[in-house]
Length: 582
Ligand SMILES: Nc1ncnc2c1ncn2[C@@H]1O[C@H](COP(=O)(O)OP(=O)(O)OP(=O)(O)O)[C@@H](O)[C@H]1O
Ligand SMILES: [Mg+2]
Image 1: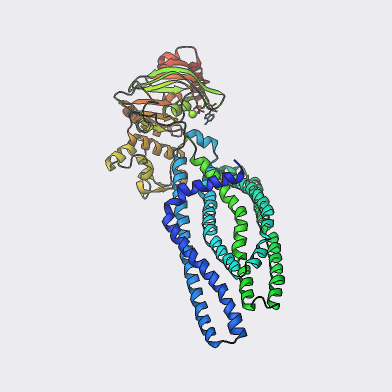
Image 2: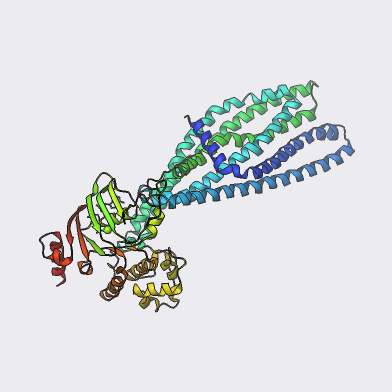
């Protein structure tokens, strides 16, 4: 497809999917634009009697009529301009809101892998920067198709009506403007592509620095970061300057061509008036029409250049909207039926990219048992949880819960039955209550209180002046690491799912809170299948079974007593930890 075909394709797609639902408003806006163009033509036409009847023939009566006529025309022109203006704004904003909703929905529902492939900043810029560009694109398309084209049509029509020969001469210069304009358009497309990706990087960078501000400060990295920021800012400035220059380069060409047209007209038209072939009024009116084509002509000429930014943004946004999820419900997927809660891995192999992360894993986690996963950092323990929740699908093998392959059941029902306390605690802006109830909005006060007690949250919550309603800063900035962790455990307690996944859930806790939680977990694990990942081996001693992983393989399994008595990785890990503690 050529560039202009692609552009047309993009615009048609925007029209079909986003603009056409507002077609009635657009038709109304067009109606206003028609009125606007006609009044513009009328203003020009009024010049003819002004010169011929008022100035030359000194017709006083005509002067009164003309004054009234001009005033009314301008009022109508103003009103129609207002009408189309607000309609266009309404349409533009509504389309943008629709697009933003679609983009957010698409991103929120995308696979986890999608988020490693796309920088956060890029994803943020889709809903901010790109959207603004697309709004401008849509406004420009509608205005140029409507107001500018119609006005031009009326004015050119008027010119031909006045004097078709003169009009043909005036328009002869037009084709000469095409080549430089399309060149500028291509340049703009390149610049706006770079600007958009740089803006994404810039937003990513800002997010990282502000989130990691404590590290930045403690390592005295402010100056380094200022320097890095300056590099981004400078690059963006260069692109903006380039784009401004490219846009401005259209003007000298258009001005020169416009001047040329006017020189020709004054020469030829003036000669006609002098020779008496035409009246001065008709000539003035013609010149006025020609001059007034300048504005719409300029806008239409710039259209190709100005559209580029919006088109590049639209292309990017559509690529996100077209992104196909790899992890989806199979056709005919059923609800997960979970009478017991047995989990079975069969020959599961998985890699994030080329490097194998899990190799040929087969094991069964009996229903309602507490099983611990241990092993060195990077062994693949968290990855197992990722597979169980279908954040990723294994390349090989099958995972079953109570005999049903997790790929045969709906993702919603699978995740509904699993509560996860992840390795990195995530809290959202809002109150402690909102954070604990995240995912369980219908929880009763009694259930919330139970969850708070079991997770040892009550002790610190009761010391807060606003208790449960205390607002926590973004990402839980106002809470200690252990407090955040307890909130995330309370959230999992409240979900009360038959399968519980704890990934280093008690790693930030002091011994006394850990003790409370261990006891609570003991109650909690009683009636559900629990998988615990822990580095602190003292916390997993009591598990019914311990699975030991190393480099993506299951190397040992059994209860603590048995494993500690056997030579192997577990014994080594224990020796390291318990020796260093004693
Ligand atoms: N999103 C990802 N993309 C690519 N590789 C990843 C990703 N997440 C983890 N890995 C890699 O997979 C391997 C296993 O990671 P995993 O997080 O499962 O380890 P872990 O056993 O949980 O370690 P830890 O005890 O430190 O949490 C590591 O080598 C890691 O670098
Ligand atoms: Mg991990």
